[in-house]
Length: 151
Image (cartoon, rainbow, N blue to C red; front, side, top):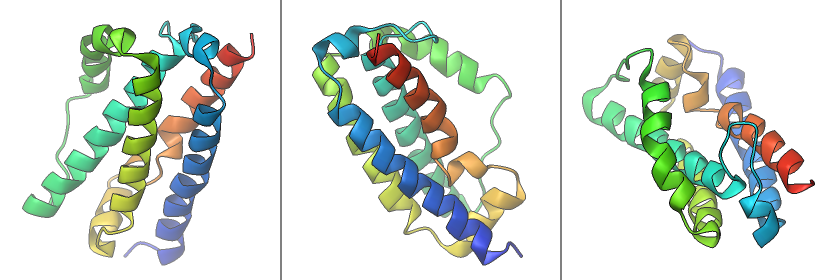
């Protein structure tokens, strides 16, 4: 059985990073949204990327609740999704990117708070920490966004 503190710490990481995400996004103007990041995407595209993966995590959890198991994914699935998603992420309206990034982040954090402890334990026991602590994905991108937007 997973230590309850571990679950609470991972959920707290999502909450802390959500506050950072909200603050960073609120500070972005039109110029900043168009700036390139080291990933090769604009800041707006990076926000769309974040929204996509928050929706992805929510859907993975819904399927887990329905089947009782977190699905295994191919090792290269993230790279495939990033390549396939880039065109749409780059084309998104920058203001819409801000909206969907915040909406998806808030939704996934709220959803994580409703999950049964057994499901969260399963994620931890199988090394899927980012399924609980979204800061694992958000923070590196937020670092890139902050650097790009201060150019």
